[in-house]
Length: 139
View 1: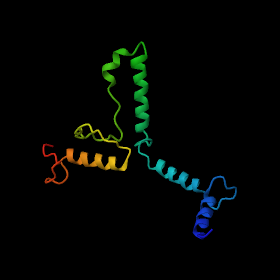
View 2: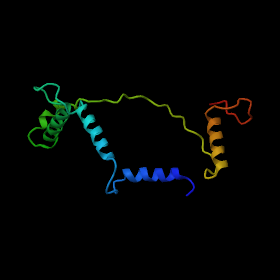
View 3: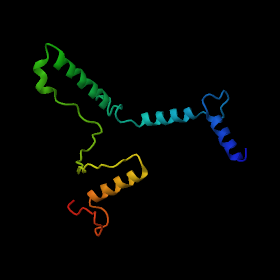
View 4: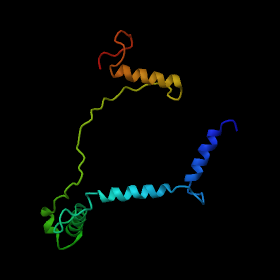
């Protein structure tokens, strides 16, 4: 072996491998500690006050109500009062505009084909050199 750095790398990997009977460090312990910290900071499972349910318990309670109202034979008249569960970490909605591209008769499995596809997409998007004869100014 000409390069001894490769051997150092191999020794480092073996020291952390879970198949090693005598590991020098326990990488899983650090991952477990990170997970414990993550769960301690979790707002979803914590009760804000002893008299109130946690957000997780509230959603679970709503699901029980939903099962009783929608599938139980005596609670169907509560359907108008059921509503939806309160969102915990709601993701904001945004609209993404999409512009369809024209079909291309190009073989994409080659390097030249990939270049040709990129050039055609840029042309269709109106990006590129305006003085180029193939430039599409309509987009």
